[in-house]
Amino acid sequence: MFTEAQLYSPVTTGADGDVTVHLSDEHPGVHDPAYRTRRNTIAALAMAYRPGEPLPRVDYTAEEQEVWRIVSAELARKRRRYACAEVLAAAEHLGLPADHIPQLGEVSEKLFPLTGFRYVPAAGLVPLRQFFGSFADRIFHSTQYIRHHSAPLYTPEPDAVHEILGHANQLASPRFAAIYNEVGAAVARLETDTALKFLADVFWFSMEFGVVREHGEVRCYGAGLLSSFGEIEEFRGAELRPLNIAEMGTVDYDITHYQPVLYCADSIAEIEDMVGGFFAGMDDESPLRVASQPTGK
Image 1 (cartoon, rainbow, N blue to C red):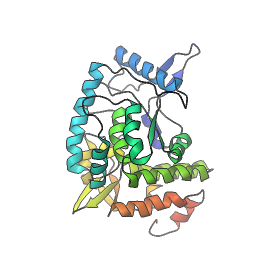
Image 2: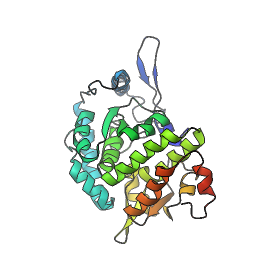
Image 3: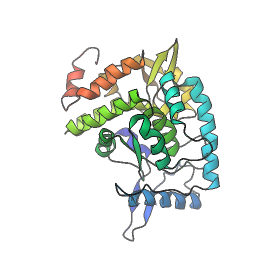
Image 4: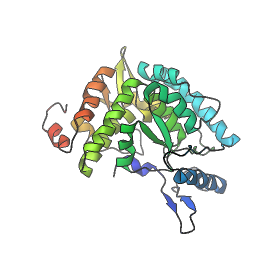
């Protein structure tokens, strides 16, 4: 299983049909009954959704809207300082609201004209093959819940802030959206779990935690960095290595800490050529092939 999957709180459905989100003991909202009920309600909306139906709308509370306003403003400020030009231009074209949490339909309405991607709801973890495979149809599975109000600038799991302010701002770039599309096409060719995990790990060190040199500075393009209030300021302290597909697909990493090793491209074109090119030609034998190449290309 892709290591990032451990970040999502498990969601189960009881014999009576009740949906339960199982928060970890360290989750900021674990001892808040109202928050736990809220999470169950939002997860149930996503689980009831069927393709082709209208997207479920969440009636967000004033407290949740305030969390969004705080995080949105802080991340916008940090994005201007630390994000690469490609992301900044994409975010400007997308124009996500800062004053309210956008419904997934609103995100899709803004995103689709730019790159053809649209959002659908997820209660929590989506199986790897389904999650990455949906990129071929330019679909992104997104959670709709918001982090606990006691820690607006922290979340132990991907929430709507990560899915929207991180991934949607990235997906608004046609160049990055094309790489996502290649990921989806690759999944359709993969039969082994080994190859699927390799793909997921390369994605982690590129589209989630990728960085690029720009005008003499290291800037981020990965959604995980773009949506992390803390790590977006700390990533320059990581050990920066050149893009290396073989390493990116096999290196061990801890999802619970800031990434100590990041893979830095020299340009967006290099990301397209090396990462996008790898996904475009990936098959079940690719992990073995790239391991035999000294450069990892």
